Length: 342
Image (tube, rainbow, N blue to C red; front, side, top):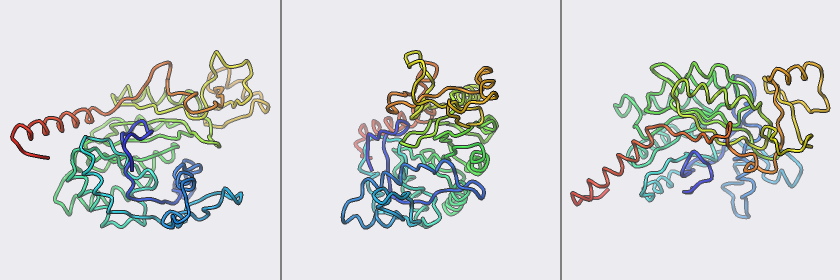
């Protein structure tokens, strides 16, 4: 748990659930889970005596033994950490469970209801509930709303789903949109393919209110087509939905200051297929000529790749965030004026 997180779209992280299993899309593995940062984050942090964390990993010594590190399928649930929310006195935009999935099957429903109770009570913060288990998120929220006699989630609880591909988006967005909430969001990170269905989820009475987008980072990062961020941005602009471009990732478009033939390049086709320049065929040259394929260069770091899109920083937040902060400031001022305390 920390304030001042390096995750740009949040101001704090809060992990009361740790551990996960790789998600699925239909009956197939979710491509977005292939290079899960949480597995490696926990694995790198293991120290002697960390028995609680060791049990979350199937192969805690995988890197040392040359194997793939993976989840064990166990999760650790720490409800005692809820007290931390009270200790943060200023409003935070909190990414809940960055080291697990809040709605994992092994997190007890009763614990999730208590989580929602606590978040409703500590209303100074906004809670970003990202998940790849959209159907369970919907079901748990419905059960909680029914049990509490409410018709919608508190305005400071924002359910969101993560999707890296079109198939994942089509599967997860509809259950999300069924959850009555002030803001519902999408995290399209890492983006691994075009998402032509996105505009259909950005309009209508029940729609998405925030889109976060980014490329993949890490040693095995996969490049994305350079056109995708602009397509998603334009769809958001057309629907008046805030768009947050987090990063290009480990790869970014070829720049004027690059060498004529940068050593680490990939030609990324419109469907996301990445081709080594040494393996180009006639159809690849045609795709480059018509602009449907783009040249991506692997950078020294994510910072070097940057987060500018057409030279502009896109880090928009839902208007509900500014309204929330203003309401909390007013409540604090009113409390002081009347001699009360919050």
